[in-house]
Amino acid sequence: MRLLKFTAIILVGLVLNSCGSVGDMLAVDEPAHVINADAQNLLAKQKYKDAADRFLELERQHPYSKYTQKGMMHAIESYFKVRSYDDTAFTADRYIILYPNAKDVKKAYNLRAEAYYIRLADVKRDQQMTTRAQSSLKALVKRFPNSDEGRSAKQKLLVTYDLLAAKELEIGRYYLKKNNFPAAINRFKSVVQKFQTTKQIEEALARLVEAYVAIGLMDEARANAALLGRNYPAGEWYKYAYKLLNNT
Image (tube, rainbow, N blue to C red; front, side, top):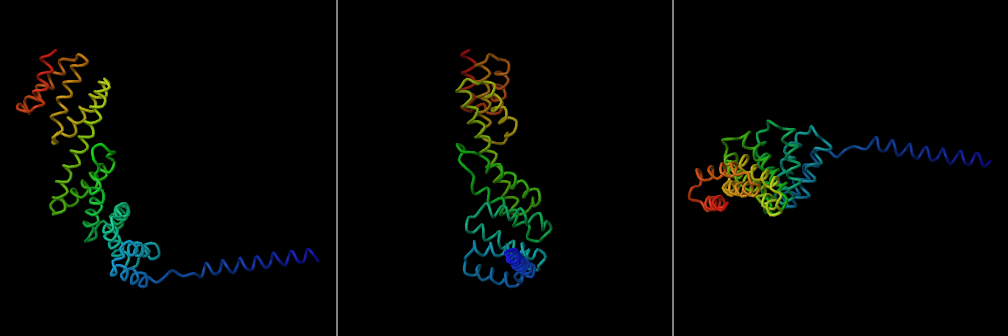
């Protein structure tokens, strides 16, 4: 008798589980037009974050719907409006990969770059965002060099170069202060070699003179001082380097 009851309980459980599985299999995604209408309604109410999330449901549930591509662009724009910049960049990345030849793909490139550029950090802080902004701006310039967005990106790139050069200088000065001259020299040389169009190069050359003088490599010190003199003969950093050489 106990065995029969136990068997019955197992059978009931199996039936219930089976019903649940059938129910799951019969579950149908929301129609694409319903999701789109709902997202458009949220957009009209300026509920941008909710609208963006809803638009992306189209990609998840209906990747080949006629609403999906436009919905993803709406999501990018909406995330940007509410300063959800990581979501902006991530969604723009996917849009560029999925729709590389779309008529509005330039907007995805631009908003991705802006999502990073708008968060550029002070030189005292980590420059990871500057590196990401630089990469995205370069991609925009490469793809659309003669567009208004491309020309604007070229100017913004100069800012990123200057920030990265300033960060290298800051680290180099730190090593110089600690008398770690090889490490300082590597940082200053990096500025000279990689960031020649920035305003930081003048100080970097002078600091190279300072570091080389400190370790007694006078030929290298004079060579950098000469380079500094040719390019910035009236600058304060040339006077600084000249004084260092003449005091040795």
